[in-house]
Length: 173
Image 1 (cartoon, helix red, strand yellow):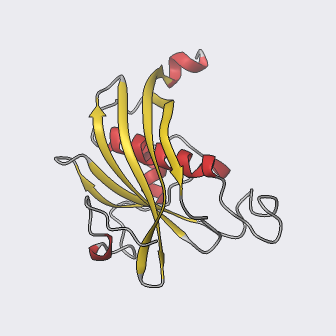
Image 2: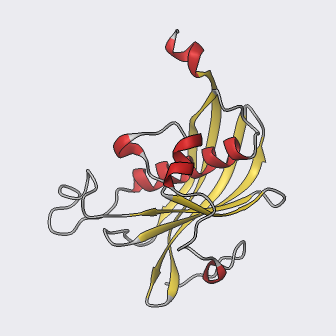
């Protein structure tokens, strides 16, 4: 079912020209390999604490052949991880958390899945920071896909992030 997003006019955003591309995401977020679940950022509003990013879902995702055979559906836990990566990017980009610190997932609440996300979809993530402090963050995140000229709500969640420490301290270097 099409849902209007009161935070951002998604139709007004240019997804062909992201503010930050995948390389820019990798420059701030520590995720690598198959666990990079954020391909670009199209809007950041530090004053309103709103960020919009996306993940282009492809047929060669590591989960596509088995979840589910002949009808691949992006696992909900990976949608939540993509939301967490969006919020981490915001924290690093806005310099709320120092670049040498690792932001980890502290919790997920009030999660609802409405529609499947499949290969060929662009999962659009809209995050609103409710608490953006260096030690603890809390974001409401909604996921959308564009279908038949409208943006359909596919999931929503509340993501909490915690600062785990410096990477140097965590790996014992």
